Amino acid sequence: MELFKGQSLLEFTERFKTDLDCEEYLASIKWEKGYCCRKCGHTKYQVRKDFSRTCNICSDTESPTAGTLFHKLKFGLLKAFYICFEMSTTTKSLSASQVARRYDISRQTAHYFMHKVREAMKSSESQKMDGKVQVDEFTIGGKEEGKQGRSYNAKKKKVLCAIQLSNQGKVKRFYALKIPDYSSKSLRTIFDKHIDKTAYITTDEWKGYRPIKDYNITQKPSNDGKNFPTLHKVIHQVKSWIRGIYSWVSEFNIDRYLAEYSFRINRSQSKETIFNNLIKRLIERKPIFQSQLVCP
Image 1 (cartoon, helix red, strand yellow):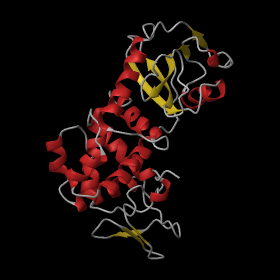
Image 2 (tube, one colour):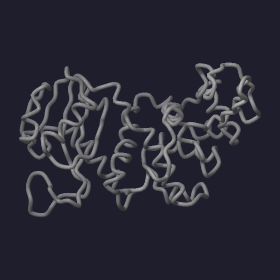
Image 3 (cartoon, one colour):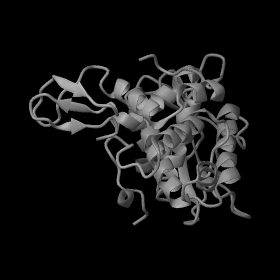
Image 4 (cartoon, one colour):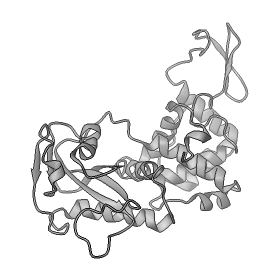
């Protein structure tokens, strides 16, 4: 089956008109390398009307949504595809309340499904940033009055981010994650997860970066962000995006929202395949249950 490409809503509505269209699309991606029975390992099967596969030996039937993040979906698959399309292609984020009204589902159902999509958007950490990389921290919640330097206000979410720059100074990739504090141990998290040891890394003069000796780090004054204009522009965009659509973001979920933003910015040069990329991730990730999406 031909993969969907592009960001045209008109083309999307022409391609996906029913839940069955979506089932067929999922099946084509899920079993693109061939079918293997999850119970007995046999490879011969029958295709059902809903594009499920039934094993010729043990008769086990597996649906296209089984074992994916679409597992036990509480609303139609067509609506789920539309939500995925919007979350992957829009330049502005969507709140659960907006999605609930638009697709006639409850806000709670929209909230949980959107977090599943954000889970799929998280980086696999398989391709690390190299070349020119800049690292900095920021808080979600604004500046503290009358204070300079890092915010230690427990109510503010501390975030560590890194960008990879092209030779022209444009953003190639961006990653961000929450940190508990500004210690060296916390700061090196993004280095180990997302930055290659060959990268040329620049940070400000914060002392927490000094003990990280196994990376090629150069420190220089921030000058209120003027020495890191592209990085601070991205930070401002992230903070504005979160403030503009979400009245409050919990510490428990902040990494999911950061993953959503990173997913789109990191695929700004491959927008033709961004929807298909997301659907593939939703298929490859194991099911997540509601209890895993609720703050303990």
